[in-house]
Length: 331
Image 1 (cartoon, one colour):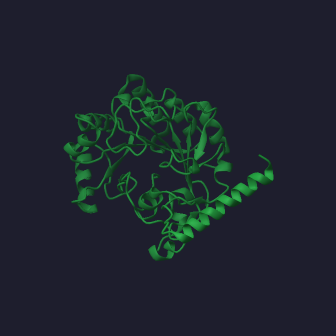
Image 2 (cartoon, rainbow, N blue to C red):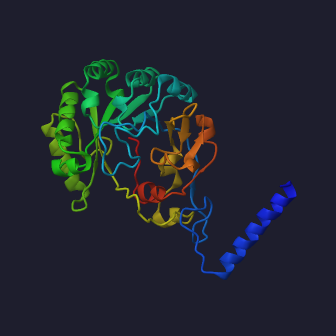
Image 3 (cartoon, rainbow, N blue to C red):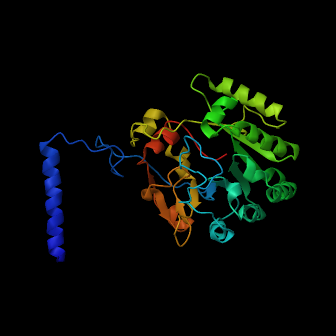
């Protein structure tokens, strides 16, 4: 087919689509157009304000399979493969100054080179926030020895944030499997006994308010010997729920004024995440920690490429977690 024929065919398709939309009750799907909402309003976007947190996703493999894991990590899911020190170092070299480096997964302590990656991060002066379930992968002797050495050398610049879906063992185990709460508590006690800086990430049950949830998590932390202030949102993060089939409203440019919020406060204004897909030749950068499966949010092979253009809030989780929920994975 010649170029002019291709253009004519495309023009015909556009004309047919226009007539179809004009002559029927066609309604565009929500979150389908990067620039315009289903109601025809201008979609909100978030510009880059400078790096606050760079996330490293060490892979989707995990020792457990949570019922509501947002990236479906499991003992068999390797669609995001383990990062290596060689993957990570070019991104660290791009950073001007020192920032927070976050490490997530999957379960980061399953990554073979995790201790070396942690050392590379902190030896450059960055602070480290590592998300873990504090279960068996962390409790292997090699990992324990490495963590003790890193904690002794870098002290408060290394924080391990442990996920507890509830302060109630039954609720936590319903999400993560029988015995998961007890095993996580064992890991938390071990960290506390060695003076490792610990934070908690939890969820607030629908039948309790923020202060009630924080008091219950605080009592649990105290019982485990943790030096943790439950009122401090850096010590205890309570995340909004993300529902896979949730139907939040689309965020328009007018929403900032209506909601009294600023685009500069949204996670993708100052955070990015490094991933490596199975079979990929190298690591790449996504807009945030949540959207690893939507190719529209994979932004480039360097931090410079991945921060050049605004991020268009064209996904339900942009609305439910970040804008309306006020969530951020950073400390």
